[in-house]
Length: 338
Picture 1 (cartoon, rainbow, N blue to C red):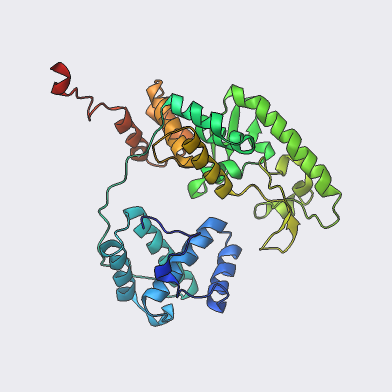
Picture 2 (picture 1 turned 180 degrees about the horizontal axis):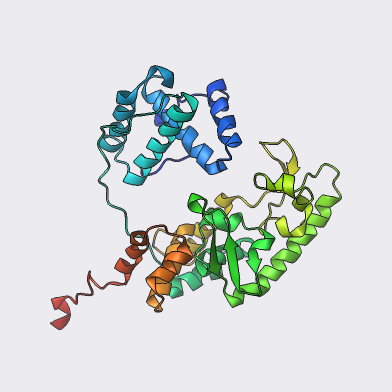
C-alpha cells in the first residue's frame, strides 16, 4: 500500500475506531475551525486511526515519542511505504500531539526514513490522449480535457468556479491548489466554446435552485461568506462542474449544490482508456503528466512548466525530462548501429 486509501479500508484494519468517536469528532471539529481542507482532514483522521490501532487502541495521550517512532518504522519496514506517504503520516501525528494533545513531538525523532525512489510518471502519447478523449463520456469530456489542456490536478478541476475562467486572457485561475497556492494556467482556445456551453448549464441549475426555498447557495470559502453574503447565489461563484443533485453540507447542515465527485471522473477516465485500448495504467493524473511532458517536448522552458504545474521545487518538474531522454542522457544504444 503506497499511499493511504481514505476511501477503501483494508480488511487488515477492520478494527479501527468508529468515526463517531467523541475524540475523533473533536479533532475533526478543531480542524474545521482552523479551516483545513476536507481532504486534509480525511487524510489526518486516517493516519490517527491507523496509529491508535497499531498501539492496541491506547489513547495517544498515553503514548510518547518512541511510540510514534515505532509506528513510522512499521510503515517503512513492514508496509514498504514511499517517503511521501511516511511524511504524510508524520504530519498527521505532529498535528495530533501539538494541537490536540498539546504535547508536541520532539524535533529529533529517530526513525527509519523511507528510501523508496519516486516512480517515473506514466505518460501518454499525443495520439493516445486524443483516442482517450474520443472515448470518454460527454459529461466528463470537459473536466478531462482541462486536466490535459491546462495541467490541472483532479481536485483543482472539479473545484473550479465560473469566475475562475478568464476568457479575455485565455487562462484559468487556480485558487488554493496544493499547499494553498494560487496560480494562473493556460486555457486552450478550443475549450472556450465548450466552457461557455457549460456555464449556460450552470446558469440553468442555478435558476432551478433559486426557486427552492431551502437552497442556501453554494459553499463559500472561509470569511468570504461573511464579506459577500449574497455571492453564494451568484453565477460567478457556482461550481463550473456542479453535481446533478442538491445535497446537505455536512459542516453547516444546509442544502447546497456541490461539485461533481472526483471518483466519477476517475472511473470515466479509466474506462475511456480501456475503450481506447491503451494498455498503460491511466488515471486522471496521467493527463497532467502528459501535459507537462508534451509542453517540454514542444520546446517550453522548464521554469514555465514548473509555474503551470504549481511545483514549489524545480526538481519535481525535472522528473519529466527523464521521459524525453532516450535511454538516459540521450544515449543511443549500440544495438542501433548493428
